[in-house]
Image 1 (cartoon, rainbow, N blue to C red):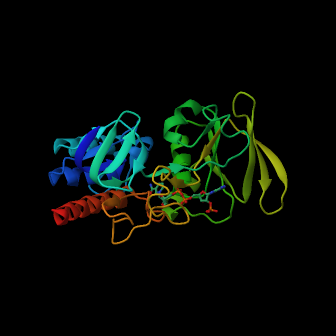
Image 2 (tube, rainbow, N blue to C red):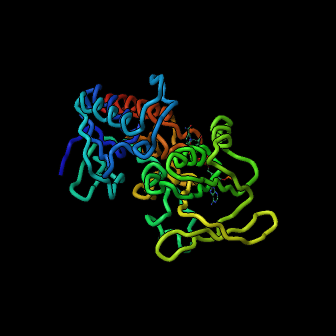
Image 3 (cartoon, rainbow, N blue to C red):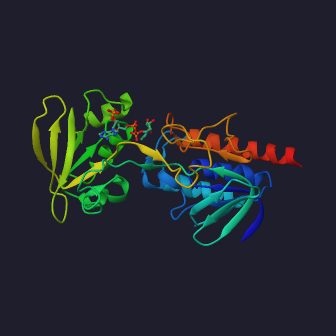
Length: 307
Ligand code: NAP
């Protein structure tokens, strides 16, 4: 058991690592429970073009590795452990991982969000055999093949463009006519010679015994059923906040996001929040990082007031 921590940070995306940087610089000796893949969602992206300060863009994994090193430089301890349960009912707060228990005066919850799935009958069975929610992880396996991307947001456009580097043909399928994606991303995908679009379409199931061979579809307007041959199915249909271990202890909104009061405070005094786990709206690396810095500053202020 590790006791007497001033602060423990759950999560190692831009929110958690920026909180760690600020907390370390404030001499709070933060411990970060980074999970098995430190760096969060950006470890699974390619080029990040909208994080200020990088004129030519930066690779997601490189950005996150830099954030880890920067926080460590000031004394943050980044542990490759996953929080499996928390007890926020008494102080000091307890956080357990599969290896140890940590007791801390404050907690910053920054565990981000996870990819959504369509919950089709054969989806999970064929996961890793053509079904994926991460183009940057699995795109390489589709060299010379044909793939489908589901979704109409920026992620779908980004994944389609990325997959076009490997696949011969990428089809974006979206359930409506209008797209949620930003104009620039949509235009980029629409003008790409390898990418085509199908709208008003619903996926009923994934076809294939050992690996993905096609999709069973339904036209959302006419109701007409059809099949579509493809080697891969990539989902880009949004995310769900990673609140499983804190649910029941922290106040959540009806979509499962942590409710904040007064910037980064939760309903539990001493427990703070930062990043996508609180943010269904902006979900940007820069907004998560900004909120991470705010949470660390709020922790510092809170601890000073306790003394
Ligand atoms: P999103 O904007 O929420 O889009 C999700 C898409 O999936 C929507 O088009 C939605 O359709 C569709 N969808 C959701 N559930 C579905 C279902 N059950 N069946 C079929 N389709 C479904 O999520 P996102 O694209 O992951 O983007 C999240 C945030 O990150 C956004 O703010 C985005 O701007 C940002 N982002 C930015 C970049 C970038 O700038 N480089 C890259 C990626 C993401 P409907 O439209 O019909 O709801």
